[in-house]
Amino acid sequence: MSEYIHKSHNVTVLLYHLVFPAKYRRAVIDESVDMVLKETCLELEKRYQVKFLEIGTDRDHVHFLVQSIPTYSVTKVVTLIKSLTAKDLRKPVMSIEAYRKMAAKMDQHMQQLANQNIQEDYLIIDRMMGYTPDLHKIWVGATDTQLMALANEFPRFYRYALIMEDAFAKERNKTSRPYDGTPEFSEPLKETMAAILTTAATLERGYQTLLEEKQLSISPHQANELDTLYRKWLLDLECFKKAIKSDSSTTKMQHDYVEIGMDRITSRITSLVKCSAQ
Image 1: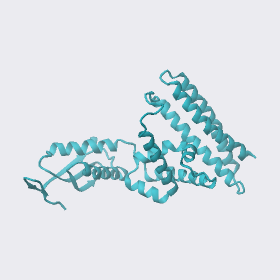
Image 2: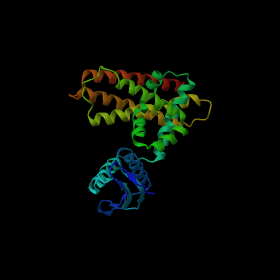
Image 3: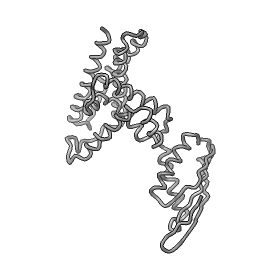
């Protein structure tokens, strides 16, 4: 329901019924788009003097019943809604099931670390390094409602997320860092490194599971799949290292950081591979 808005010199109740069609009237609005749209509008209410009384979606258009103030022209209201919702809707939309699968893997690996009595934050950060890309996808892509659901369902994933958030906050608050001023990796190198880290996490979790379930019947097919993935990962890692060396925009410091970090991960995975083969 609309309410009177009281300002120092006026009392108003301005309602606008706005209809935004999809481009070319394409039927592109589904449940996931509807959810992102409504979450964005709720955030918009917190930052601007607009209130969404009703939001209705159809396959090819959206209806808004909006209340605002006299100092906001209709043009401004429309521009706010179009620009801010478009920005969020352009982000790749992932389903809650996709987020659940990623969170479940982190939750499982955190349990494995707990079984090994690895509790210190710095050790968890080091051992869970491969999950950084997926954690980032969840943290920036999931809605507040989805994050709450994931935190309730996967408490160990939530603990890992809080550890990483705290670590990033401490890093940001430092007055200076050794890597300040160094250029970022190119987009292809960033994507390759993210894929290598994600595969490394899969390998660590997979081989640890094999070790924990050694007494159970593990199919040779599962073990062979992991071994094949491990060999491919080693080849991809070497290609990545060579690509960094040949990239003229990459500094020696960046190369050294990658070498040290990847060597630690490789050493852990190789150790797990040897133990699982015994």
